[in-house]
Length: 197
Image (tube, rainbow, N blue to C red; front, side, top):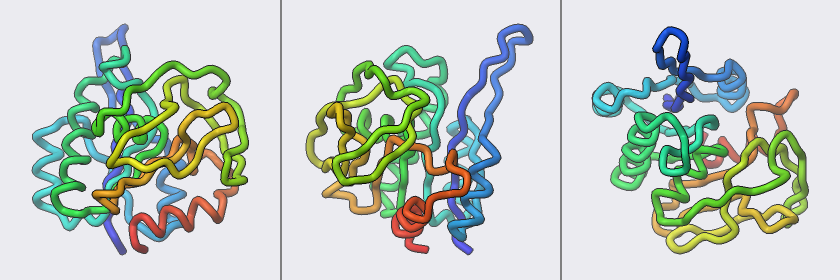
C-alpha cells in the first residue's frame, strides 16, 4: 500500500499558549476508501525533512485549514512545511494533491495572487465542467499563470481546480473530498489518479 503524507492545520490555543497540529478523522476514512496509507506530518520543518528522507513516501496531500501567513494567517510554520513539500514534488516527481488551502499554497508557490471571495463558505456551487462541489474557502483566484493550467471554474469565475503543465504530478482542487458522506466516487477516482493507485 502506498504511503501518502498529509499536512495538518495549526490550531492556536491562546489561553494556554499552545500550538497544536490537527487533522480531521475523515481523511483516514477517505484514505482507506482510496487505498493508500495516510501519515500526518508535524508542522515542524526539520522533522518533515527527516521523514521525507527516511520513509518511502509515494504521495503528498496538502489539506485544508488555516489561511496562508502572507494573507493574514497565523501558521507560518505550516507555510514553510508546504512550500518544502511542493519543492520536493517538483524535484522528485512525487505526486502532490492540494485541497482548498493546499491549492492556495500551490497557487501562491507559482506566483498566482489570491483575493477575498464572497459566497464560497459552507456552500455548494456548480462548476463549468458540470460538477457540483462543496465550498469552505474565503480566499481564491480568478486567474492563474503558467505553469499552472485551469481545470475548472465556479459559476462566479473563481478557479476551482488546477494542474501543472511542467510538473504533471501536481494537482489542486478547492473543494473538500473528505467532507462528503458518503465519499463521492468521482473524488475517489481523482485521488487514485493523482497518486497512481
